[in-house]
Image (cartoon, rainbow, N blue to C red; front, side, top):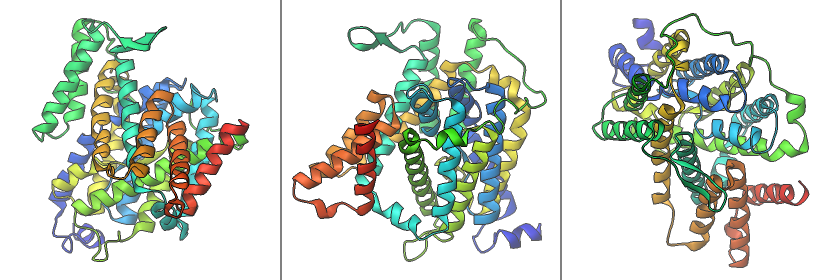
Amino acid sequence: MSVLIDFFKLEQHGTNVRVESMSGLTTFLAMAYITVVNPSILAGAGMDFGAVFVATCIAAAFGTIVMGLYANYPIAQAPGMGQNAFFTFGVVLGMGHAWQTALGAVFISGVIFVVLSVSPVREWLINAIPRNLKLGMAAGIGLFLGFIALKNAGIVVDHPATLVALGDLVSVEPMVCIGAFVVITALSARKVRGAVIIGILAATAAGWLFGNVEFDGFVALPPSPAPVLLQLDIAAALQWSMVTVILSMLIVDVFDTAGTLIGVATRANLVGDNGRLPRLRKALLSDSTATVVGAVAGTSSTTSYIESAAGVESGGRTGLTAVVCGVLFLACLFFAPFAQSVPAYATAAALLFVACLMARSLADIDWGDITESAPAVVTALAMPLSFSIAEGIGLGFISYILIKLVSGRARECSAAAYVIAVIFALKYVYL
């Protein structure tokens, strides 16, 4: 016990082993849904559900435990929502690349992130991207996830004249999804821990009762990871057409991680007096190496989770919270049969709830400056309507630069913004 107290500096942070352990459990319950949702999304890319389930648990456990032991932060990690959607619907189904190539792109973006994490470039890059574009990206990813959720539940369907239309709301899938979404949102409003996983379980149970879901059991030995383990195609990911894909993965991962780190650390009173995040390099390294390991294991980019705030609110202040959460992810490996029994419309309810949380970023946009708000809105709208996170980011940067140039405010644009906009413009011209 004393070893844990000294290693994690528990007394210095005003906490103890019991509080940290319970906080780790709280964080796990708040984000356990990813062990089901991530495999179901990547299965749409043609990947084996069971193998991706294993990869998800391994990536989450590795990243979370490293974050706890190396950076001493109460922040958990797992394959990111939004990144997995981009992987499946943007890169594989949208652009027609093989999922092995997409895994190669995840690996390369992770390696670049590792390099950035140990160099001064990390702060230059994080601080150079316009704040309002970051907010537009977060909201756009949320809208994209919401659209995917409505589509997976059959609430919206395709239409030859209007592109989309309302589905049959009185059928089982839409009704159960809407009911689960209401349960998740209501429980979250009541501050119930594990609201998302409770909603997923309730929807799954309803599916079993209606008889349109096959129950495969609860516990078994972990599935074989072979179908996705070491299947990444790095050579194919090095082609020119993948440059913007890798760039998009990198941008989303870097800023999602930075935003989560700053947000959770602020709520835990871990930010220094100068407003800077202590041990930022270690935290970013923990995140970036987890992405590399996740790609090798067979899953999309790993990132820090805002659900870590649930553990912080329970008193978690050190890396022991993260270590406990990471160990619980390893224990999840033995619940693959149950994960495979969860229907798509159950996870759609969770996706819709996450979408609502991410869309709140729209409130923080500087609506008083049209040169800032317009590109942010373009970014947010383009993601679901183009069915691509990368295209939303690209159109956002291009519109931001052009609007600033024409309005005579070119000096407000950072060098990084110009570079990113040019890269995306070249992609649209030559690809």
